Image (cartoon, rainbow, N blue to C red; front, side, top):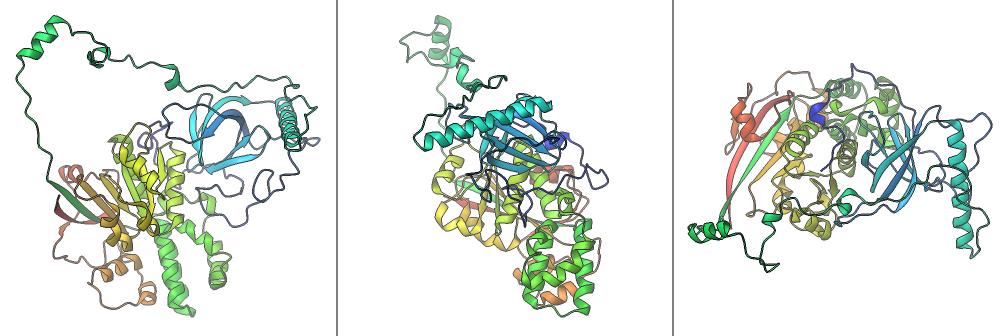
Length: 504
């Protein structure tokens, strides 16, 4: 697993540290939801027949962007990989766009944290692997590159029409970008030749090794385990500052305006998942009036970050600790694709290998543990019937009402597992709904939950769960180590744990 900069080594940049505001760009496949993406050559909204255009007088693409030559290919699990395309990488603020040799948009992403791209960086842009080449630094280089893109496009169109292009693609002078092989292809497996085995070559081992083999006692065969442990942790989290602000606004708004229960329920679900998801409601008829009042009170969508959601900060810290520091695989289960898109965007931003498991083939690859298999699996609960069981030590359930499906997802009886369910607490509606689902609250008044929401520093009620162990702060170092929770998670207010054995 390659990482350009591990999250554990970076500063926890909260809202006090302001990055330059990036321009409002079309939505990346795995970033914050967008509403009105603009038309762009090569996108699904553009006309492919138009092709790239020459730069206008006075136009300078480098004014707001950095542009790099790149090599790219489709992501693959094959051991031997080759680059299949040349192109450019256009970096504008937090937006990163990959284009092919005709200037057509291939894929894009939004970085959660601005990064410094440099030559030989390898990263994932959407579904593509990319290697950064030299940077385009002058306007003349931009003009040359655009001429090459136009020539490549003309050649492509002529080929489609059965004609031989009269436009020489290599007519403009520029550094040639030869498709390269990866380092793995150019290396040989000679790291430890003594362990490669002699039987395949017909050679006898050295005398001293042969004597040691003959004299060494036989190794006892360890029988396979017949029992595995499954530990579940319910982690109640203090809401983020922005979440509190929005919930207080909604509480006041609902007291003075008539809001139906379904609308209320949808609102608090989105706020607790991440406030940025409210953006998906801007054009929704049922929420239009409310969003017109609320949106001016919110920070710009692109300024919202990891730390504006208690649950998403939990995911970020756990991936940082479990996957990056400990090298363990992790699976994230969610009810909404938008939640998975945020996690995918995070993995892309920090070069964490990942895959959304939506087919048995992808599950088999993840379960194999082979080199190149993803470290993070993302699963939509509605896909569970068609994908089969996932073999993974760590499972994060992003939506509390997907807990019942955990056993349907995990390959129980094959590996020790830890299951984490983060719940936004502090007396917020998600906590109350969570307790209702456990049968600890009998009423189902979602509207009342929001109307009565109040700011609290601890959960409104510390329920005793019959078969669970309740652990309250301050958490000991031994407990954090046992639970495998990062000590940088400062918003945990309460943990319930339950341990069980799964027999084969």
